[in-house]
Image 1 (cartoon, one colour):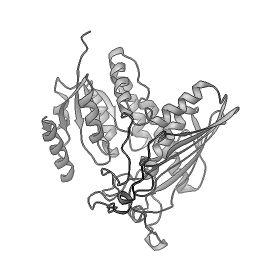
Image 2 (cartoon, rainbow, N blue to C red):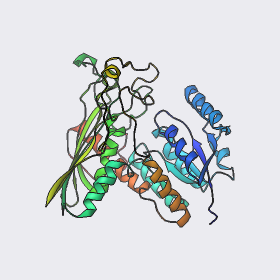
Image 3 (tube, rainbow, N blue to C red):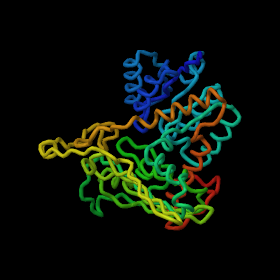
Image 4 (cartoon, one colour):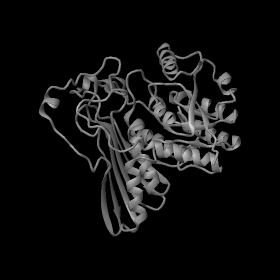
Length: 380
């Protein structure tokens, strides 16, 4: 059977995205090929350097004009890897050009942008996927248990997602910049907001297991990292939620410091049903090895150009033995394009996901329970 090969345009290698992790997926898949890297001319010098470096390494052109890149006839899919503040505009531009979209995590910086993206995608009729949340081991195993039926009615879910990266130190009151930042303050050169970037995976698990969330309570201004304290941007956050059926969900999302977990960080969930309870640890089964010299002699220093270790591997972490779960997402996406159907996690799912996170931040700032849907037109 002669199956079409899809050309992929890589749109930006922002340090706030996972574009560099997507490259091996597109290179290895028999139905995709990378044809170019593109970005706008008015970007930071460091980002332009990264873009050019990746284009050179991949042996493809670097185009400093997104509109011009979208005119290429060999571009079928665009992989969006820009900062969250620019994603809505770029998604709409790509969809308007008739390109299918592989989108890294978030579709907009506020709920109004997310609404606009969903409406624009519907008009354009292109296929979209936001792959980071639904194909991982924690979601796969949790859904398998729910579908098995042994728990019967699912009454509650708790999920912990934590990254073992960064170097925590004592943070005193004098180190904390007040007040705590509201939603919308996303872009920093040295940190990421951890409820947004880590807790987001736990929120997605809640989405897949329960019905639509109707109210959110958040907490988030505890600090272990001076980089976060100086920005008033959380390094640990929790959310408590109730869905439309009355089921309860809680999550925590943070980073716990380098070498605090030899699988890269805690990834677990508790499912509470009317007829049973289950605990899922996505890092198990595993073969653990502890070699004293590797632990005591490791270099735990944090790179100056990567203070929160976004791109660097922490010492002491074992290598993953399972395939990249996003490979399942790419198969799903290609199948959706071929068959003209929706993949498992679309921009509409991503909008609901972002709405929960935005409600969580609003709750942290106000100290009040926030009900969904959010009021439109109230974004900062």
